[in-house]
Length: 531
Image (cartoon, rainbow, N blue to C red; front, top):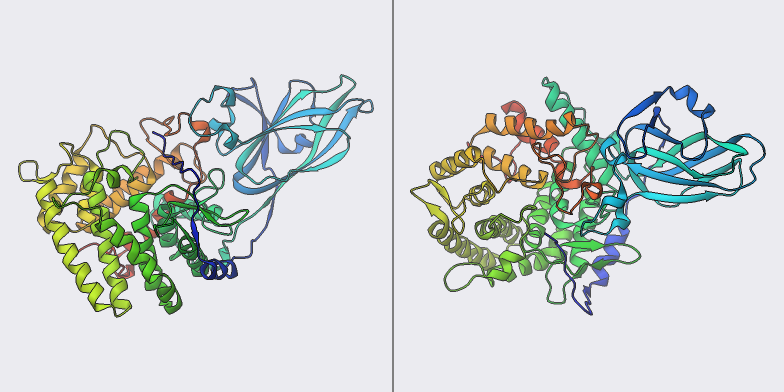
């Protein structure tokens, strides 16, 4: 399923004042130097079988044609690589022709890029071919990479000498300041480790904006931003970065005022020509949550009208029959799933966003708008209950389909009684057939829906089993898509382009701190589960 939009001659509107303000909020980037902690050789070019090499021996390992060296930097890094080369044997009389392959996981390291035939561009695959003309030399690669492992393969060279990798280092880059993270200790070692990896995931996605993934797409996406901002609120607390991202979305939009699904920031700021119905509504949610944390009157004044535009556009997609039109449903993401019917989900996201929009209106003392939003909320909740609730099934049914996603978004939208919501989430937990939830993005909202109906033990159990299964599979940072039963699954036609450090998977730290600690440590939030 290709999530792609191509609009010919697309010219997004630009608000110079908002974009100038966003530019003023650009964070300084912090850097560290990381060196390899170990190394090994792959026995075959695309095999995961390896023979270990002690780190002390790496500078003395000479590489001839066809030989490789894999460096393990010990953790997921985002930054710039420097390699220093020397040689053994006669004076180099021909260039060394090298292939450099960067990988976030061992599995990616052993994949053959030539086998990839997916719909995303293969240019995202992190491989480089370089000629080293003079040895000894110091090679500084200009491109930023996201990786833990680096495989260096000698494609060809002269038989008169062998190349030695004398030194390797990565200059990391992030705007996350670890000194600002409050200490966290949890008696449960699994939750402790999940919390640590959650923050590592967020940190590696915090650059000059909140990126969705430092390997791919390296872009500011609205759905990811909302979740990143939640985890930021319990960790790095860089609210200026959240504000910058909100201003970027507000400053470059569709010509009719809609918020784009994502924003390009280089070489200039420009909205992408992709619109997602649910992501545009998340602008409303993220703005209100930012204001909960900061009480930023400037942001409220600058972005209030834009937020209301998103809600008003969405409501215009409701027909006289009380249903969302087909285009709005087609424009809804929810999860990577071709099988998922999204009618109930899309309606749920809209009703969910209305709750936040009304809070914005009250902050603005816009009582007329607040009353109108309250009226719309009531109308849509009644319509959703009539359309989707099944007394026989005791859950929500979307075009004949029962899915976990439909239960989640109807529950988060508060369209039903507490008893109905509890029944719906029990049904969601019992489902074993398609469509499965495929991304941590959807699993986040699933956990939140469990919490909302008071199923705290089940929420903790699911959080631990799902995110810990990534750790068991070798994750240093949490992944873009993950199905423990199908670890090779990819929405793009090949797992080699999957992101293994992805923004929307960072929220366990938020959920652990806000909802899974002892009651006296929990703090009330907009999504606090019902008591």
